[in-house]
Image (cartoon, rainbow, N blue to C red):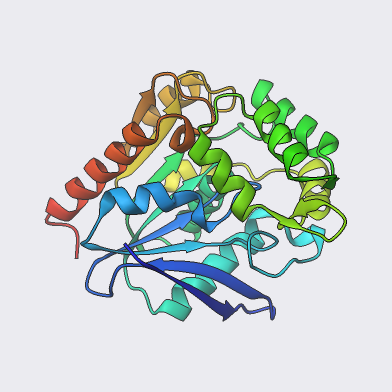
Amino acid sequence: MASDSCFFTNRSGLRLHFVHWGDSSGVPLVLLHGLRAYAQTWESLVQSLGTGYCIYALDQRGRGLSDWAAPETYHTQSYVEDLEDLVAHLGLGRFVLLGHSLGGANALEYARQNPGRLMGLMIEDIGPGSSTQGDGAARIRREMSQTPLQFGNWELARAFWQASRPGLSEQGLASRLAHSMKDSGTGVTWRHDQQGIAKARLSIEPTDLWPAVRALDCPTLFIRGGRSDFLPAATLEAMTACNPHIRTVEVADASHYVHDDQGEVFNGLVAGFLKGLCESPRVS
């Protein structure tokens, strides 16, 4: 499926980029990437879904081709407002929302602050407490503090990703090199605001996601990597117990990055969830 690269200006004057696939007659689906990712991280999912969907993937502020911002604005409320501005720019009514990690937190808070707007919600490997406690939160903080701002050449950049994500497929590696890095003239550097994002991640208190989980008012699927260090299985159980709209699934042999590690399984879960929504009489 062909894509279009598009821009809009948000309420604070930032120029934000998004990628669009499909046509306006399809079911609207908005995709939010993780902490250091980019819109094209969803390319495999989009191609597997095929026709019938109108898909938008946002480069969240400071990432991809979107403008960078002050580090103190790399927090949930600003991301939610950016999503609200994208939805308004596109003129969307009700739509389906999918977010991974940081994007999942932003999706949950959008749902809480905009009740009734979502046909369905999918959250990949994040839940209440994920960003504040446990091995995964410690790993992210460590990565943020230790990631170099520049590499001498592309081979060193490739080696960084291979060491950071040992299970990453060649396709996933190629995608990261193409969309999260660029030639700086003196080496290879990040497309995203690595320094600002790291400063925010290490200094801003993550949003408590329990109020959003309790308030969910649409069919919601949480997808956990079976060997995730970020979303404990016990949190899945607790979320299911507190809201009847929530379903959960674990994907074997997948880390925090389920859509990378087990792409076909992940894509199938998303397709199945969307099919169920489209067949429901509640969807319009």
